Length: 143
Image 1 (tube, rainbow, N blue to C red):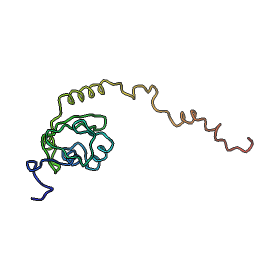
Image 2: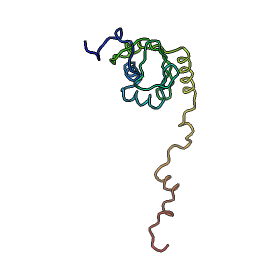
Image 3: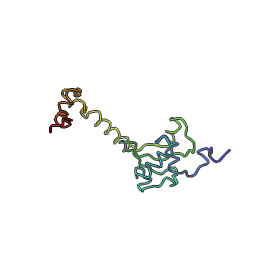
Image 4: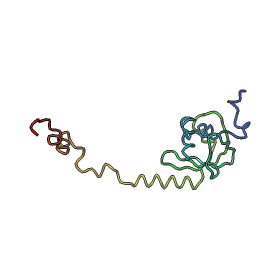
């Protein structure tokens, strides 16, 4: 069996970027590396590098867009499998689940930005009136 296809039982540690990719937090390893570089991923409360080794029992805090998550590493895998297999690699902490639920509820209850628009989008005629093109961009010679 090649080194890149070792099963999770043989691994004792794995690069953070590779684990985040295999656990399906990020679509590619390069996106995982980018997010780690921006400081959006920490391991056990400390800033991490992409090459940092993670082990079962480590706690990883990360952001996926606006969503903050905290997960405990349960297993390691160097290959990216289907979502149910990837979800077996970690367990989200109860605090993280509660915070995500609160954020989802706040987004659901937030006012719709489009509701503040009273008249809708201005027409071409309205935009020309607003810009007063005739006054500002006159090409007449007798100015």
